Length: 104
Image (tube, one colour):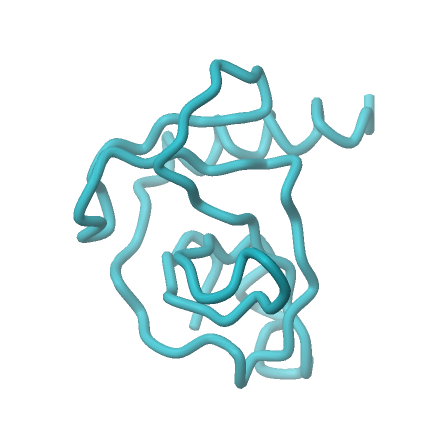
């Protein structure tokens, strides 16, 4: 389990079981019981906080990382690893998270 991996997870509530992207730093994941993830959706709405990832990480349909839909999930709610996103996309997603949370 590491930053940049896409996992199938049970995020609970209305969202239920869906793919998510791990955002937590890889170095600290072994020491944490919960990690931060972003939901992945197939419904691109053109928001500046959504990053298109296509069908990368073995996703069956064109998908988008929703950097405004963040969750802190217990690690045991992540069911199976689907794949990993490349570094250039992770940089773009990191910028979208900063924008979504107004960190700058």
